[in-house]
Image (tube, rainbow, N blue to C red; front, top):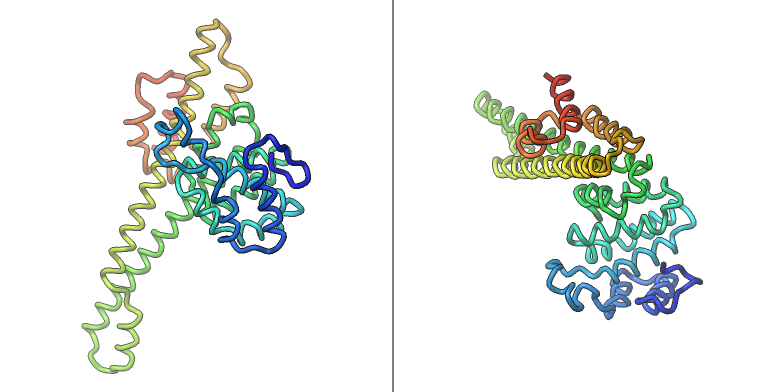
Length: 312
């Protein structure tokens, strides 16, 4: 942990973390902060790891930067938000890939796991400022290292705010496209109705969206739907994986599978279906084809069939 005043000198990046603290306290620019991190070696480029990580993000830079910055901003939520806003550029440079964004989230959890509500607040802020993508948050929540904390209520709060963020984004794109299409249709019909009042006609022409602009909106909405579908596929696939692993282990060990963990996790899966039913319903055929197939354990498949029955 890179905490000002309690550095572990054997930890890689300790000297850079100390320099970064001094730099930030002296009100450095984002570029100057990046410069402090520039010489840190990349552990993913050493030995066998070099061939297994194509994106080559630098986890050491992320560890030093995120833990140092959030430690300095830990006095209050407003201090943390100010730090994130000021050094937003650095976050974007260091966390371009999904793997790198998951590394950022790991560091947020490591620093604030004893105060989980702060984790919710910071992840929400990072989603809103596009430091992390929704898919990265979902993948992180279902990762192996989060397994011991899996039934913690704050993680479910993060999952639902992540899905809500995606749903609102797609809804906004859809509304903008609909309004643009209506404005274009109105402008076309009014231009054929009246050729007088040239001043008024010019103003309407200026307000009229171009067909190219509408096409770009259509493309953005299509991308939004693709991202939304991918998010639901990640979430439901991970649910299926962890529940299936639990059932297999219980069967192998001849144990009752209906543990508190199992019933709680199935309840959370049901909750995702019910809270986001309007959006999930759009992709139900894809989910049935790719994930909720007939060879799945009946315990898990029943949850999906119950959802289909409710929305039929």
